[in-house]
Length: 311
Image 1 (cartoon, rainbow, N blue to C red):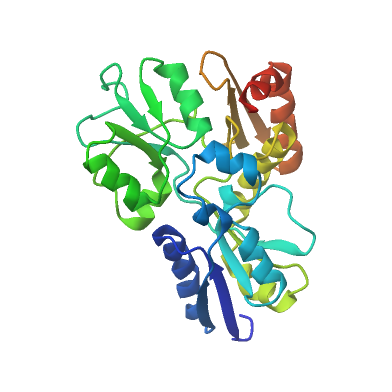
Image 2: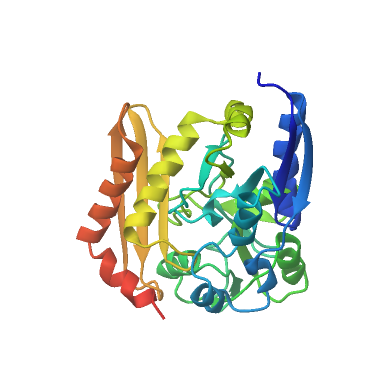
């Protein structure tokens, strides 16, 4: 155990972000550290009223992390707790991902009051999701549904669902579980139907690269299998085209021989989709695995599909 110290955590102010920050804070306190949480409003939070594609075009990377990293750099905070999928794949050399705790369920969830499954939806039913990745892959399965822009935090989206604005919404399973809001969770999509975003379900604890004391204090939180998996996913995403509005899914998971990684890239309308699954043995390099996946997807025509998604 490292020497106890005061650690200041930077977090977004949403209910889910604060759950995540408090989850890490509780584990640090159990190690004897004093912990404070500072809420930081990000560009992405300030632009919740705008369509996600428009926000992404304005602030293509780091819209939910920029201001937090600025506070980290200026030493107003000691660490930041992020949803890993919000963190750009290219990290400034001033920062380090000091720990990646064990991953929660990475799947996407079908959430509905009136329908038991995605397949049971009536033709023309309205589905709420702000993610082009989700829309594109689901259109490949059900092109007869009406996919609409749906932003806001988990509670806001669930309220809109209960008010009948849509027949169903698609959310990350991990967020629903962390908040204890699984009452309308009807189905978890398998990765071969709806491949998750890189890093989905995982947390990233970011520090200054030179802050050795904090990095050492966080070391006990790091889970090596999760770090391997998300490193491979993020390497694939980096090669294919990082950003908040790209129709790319990557998911790596442990297997009997090592790891299996799945990738999917779809055209925005869902009419075309390429998928690849690779197995890799123990001892492999995660970055090489992710880059190999990206290469296979590009060989299958993923580059052409991604160009369709650029405004």
